[in-house]
Length: 265
Ligand code: COA
Ligand code: NAP
Image 1 (tube, rainbow, N blue to C red):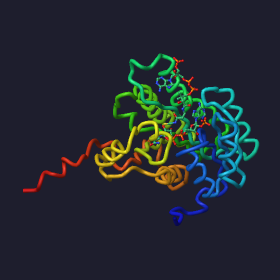
Image 2 (image 1 turned 90 degrees about the vertical axis):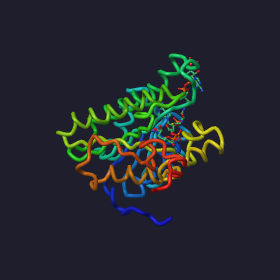
Image 3 (image 1 turned 120 degrees about the vertical axis):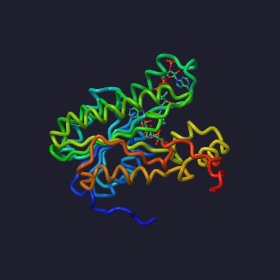
Image 4 (image 1 turned 90 degrees about the horizontal axis):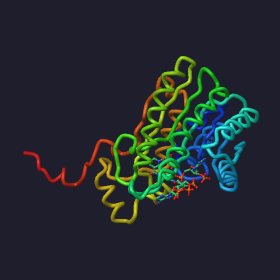
C-alpha cells in the first residue's frame, strides 16, 4: 500500500512508545519511525520488545519494563533521553483485558487491569514530563469506547479507560501552559489484534458487530497509526485534551440493519 503520510513528518523527533511489543502500538511505533522519528519501545517481555525494536529498524531501542513499576518507567525515560535527547512524542498504550462477569472477577483481577491501563498511563505520562521538549511535546494515550459506553463483562476495562480519558483531559489543562499537548485516540474494533481476539468469541459475533457499526467494518492498525501520527505531528499543534474516536462511528450507538428497513415516505 502506498504511504498515506509525508515520510519526513517526524524528522528529528524522538518518540517513546509504551506497550509496543505487538498489535496496534507496535504499528504506531513503526509508523513514527517510518515518518523519521527515533523510537524507544517498552513492554514487559524482554524477548518480544527486542524483536519489536528489530522490526522497527533504524535506531530503535528497547527495554523490558512493566508500566505498573514507576521506578522502571522512570529508568526507561532516562535511557531514552540519554540515547536520543529530549523527547517529543510519548505514546501510552499498554493494556490488559479479558472478558469476565463482575462476579467472576476477584478484586485483584479488577485491580490488575486498573493498574496496567490507568495507573500505567499515569506512570508513563508523569515520568515523561522532566524529559520532554517544552514547548512542543505531544503525548498520546490509547483509550477505548468502553470509557464512555458501558459493556457487560468489561467492568475493569470500562473503569480503567474512563480514567484514561480524564487523565488525558486533566494533564492537558495542567501542562498546556508549558506547551505540552495531551490527547487520546479511541479505537473501535480493530481486526487482527489480541484485543479483538479476546473480545470476539466467533465469526457470527464479528459479522454481527460489523453490521451494527455505521461504517459497516472493523478498523485496521494502520487507521490508528495514522491518527496517532497526526496527533504526534505539528499538524495538530492546536489540539489538546481531545479524545479522537477512530471507530467507524461505533461510539454513536447501534446503527444496525433494522434501522435501514424503514423506507422513506
Ligand atoms: N477471568 C477472571 N479473572 C482473570 C482472568 C479471566 N479471564 N484472567 C486473569 N484473571 C485474574 C487472575 O486470576 C488474577 O486474579 P487472582 O490473583 O485473584 O487469581 C488477576 O486477574 C491477575 O492475573 P495475572 O495473570 O496474575 O496478571 P498479569 O499481570 O500476569 O497479566 C492480564 C495481566 C491478566 C491482563 C493478562 O491477560 C495480560 O497479560 N494481558 C496483556 C495482553 C492483553 O490483554 N491484550 C489486550 C489488550 S486490550
Ligand atoms: P496487544 O497486542 O495485546 O498490545 C498490548 C501491549 O501492551 C503488548 O505489547 C504488551 O506487551 C503490552 N503490555 C501489557 N501489559 C503491560 C505492562 N504491564 N507493562 C508494559 N507493557 C504491557 O493489544 P492490542 O489489541 O493491539 O491493544 C493495544 C491498545 O489498543 C490497548 O491500549 C487497547 O486497550 C487499545 N484498544 C484496542 C482495541 C482493539 O480492537 N484491539 C480497541 C480499542 C482499544 P507485553 O506482553 O510484552 O508486556
